Image (tube, rainbow, N blue to C red; front, side, top):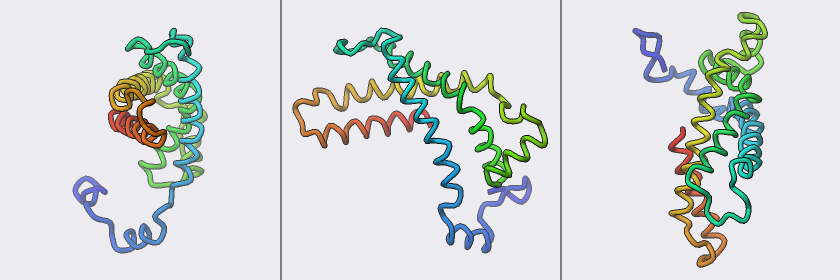
Length: 172
């Protein structure tokens, strides 16, 4: 929250705190509406990009750079397709408004260009972020999971999920 001097407060007012306590999931639906298409593109393109970078199904262990390259391809695809949703989400967070109001204000202020503000920069941002995400996931997974034939499937699943969580922290 904003401090009084700069417009930010350290604590919410009593009515704001009560509103948050009554409706803690407000804003969750727009967040899910963003991450469903984003993750569909992200993971779908990552899997399709593996053979493009030379990572074939018969390859026992890919070269260290292959997951990073496939992740960068996924990042470019996310930037090309999902960026307007990120602009609306960021505007909505900054102005504490709903997604419809955020889109309306962006369009009324900037016109259609408002939905693609910072679009060229997003190609760099998402390519780097998803390259690090998928590359670190593969590196962490290979060290944490190791030979998955030696343990139960549930343990392998849990270790892979932990690897994904750790790589997510790296790119947050």
